[in-house]
Image (cartoon, rainbow, N blue to C red):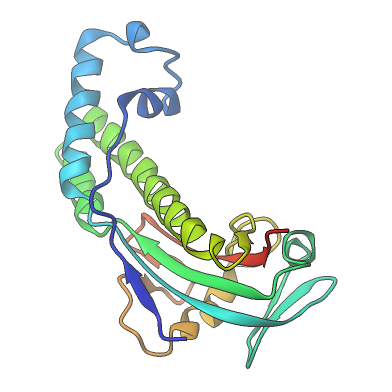
Length: 205
């Protein structure tokens, strides 16, 4: 299947989860100067993110005790596949990112010793990539529901017991399609706030 691109119309971030990520239990527990910075960085994050997801569907050839083989390859290792994909006939493989601008601005703030601003902007970025995946999953769920299918939990290289090094075999699935994410020799993605992985498609009944 030819890869497709999904671009969310807009990523909205809520202040509460960003504060809770930094262990503030409520807005009322935050000192006014810190709250002001958190609000400012949340707004800035929404302006800087450029969310994109490139994805494709691939038939599954086999799910074994500790591996997943896609039709025409490759094979990935991990017991997580038999746990979550035992009944799956297809996999939706994806690469998602919010782009490089937020990371670049956070680095500038750190270099300028604006550490509180950098901290909240970085936190907002991590929540933005998770929100990108949430929106994508909701769209995908609605799309496959009409086919009588449902989504498995998300799996990805570096999660559970799927080795991170298998990113090197995962990225070529997109067959030369330009991706918004690069991969280092150590299988680390750039921009930093990027996620790769797959969902299994299993019968809804």
